[in-house]
Amino acid sequence: MNSQHSEIKIIGVDLGGTKVHVAEIDNDVLSGGKIKNQHKVNIDASGTEQEVLSELKSAIKEVWNDGIQGIGLGIPSVCDIQKGIVYDVSNIQSWKEVHLKAILENEFKVPVYLNNDANCFAIGEKYFGHGKKYKNFIGLIMGTGMAGGIIINHKLYNGINCGSGEFGMMPYKKHFYEYYCTGRYFTRNYNLKGEEMAVMAASGHQKAIKAFKKFGKHVGNAISAIMYAYDPEGIILGGSVSKSYTYFKDEVANVLADFAYTPIRENFKIEVSENLDIPVLGAAALFLDNLGNNKNDGNG
Image 1: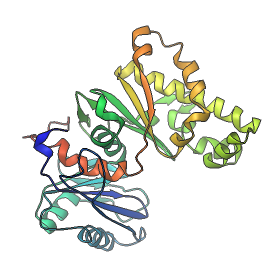
Image 2: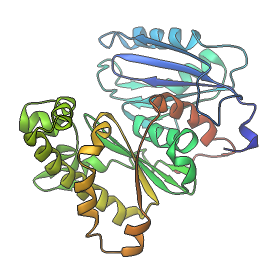
Image 3: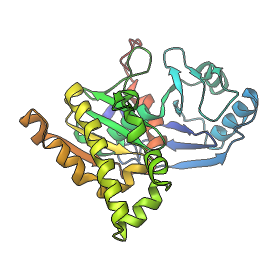
């Protein structure tokens, strides 16, 4: 975000349950969020811990060069960001407790930072997306699950246990927000995927239009709760469901029209992420976000 980042070359790693996306970002493209070199490969999610680690190392080596100064990883799991340990990685059954930071720093001899995928989304938007213009905002992912990353005073806030932003697990109605605000809402209630429902809504199908209206009310209530808790400048939506925002944004607006504090409501913005590479860019941005930090205090 400033001149101190101009000569940095970083590798970002987006580790999914079945694939890994590795990208090199260097001084020419930091401000624009473009990728210089990248490699995508499927991994054997049923492999042993060491087998998956070997596949991950090989993927990183595909874009590695001697100028790389650091590595950032986005992981779909709970992380101890201070010790660099990942726990119970989604869809990789063998990864119960992996000391990933130490393993990769020993292999590549550069600093390694890791965080969960929702936090990587938020910090990616901060450096490379809509979040550039905000000092305080929430990056909210709605896909198969619902979680967010919190940016406070331009920095990623992790909480003490890297558990901040788990908005989907907040109690709501008979369950919690994730039950009502993800793609599973459509499969559970209509036996259709969210993408299928969006196609129907685009063609004017009334069942789909009404479904998105109901869905939008739930999302609006979730966003309202986040606004009361954090008073951010805005929320940036990501994940597969966000691509259908046009079909439920009016109902979200209707819900927020009843928000109690007028100045907050009138200045608040909702945007949808537009850069498909934000997950891997956000992983790389973990390195940038940690520049100048002399200690880990739970706040990034």
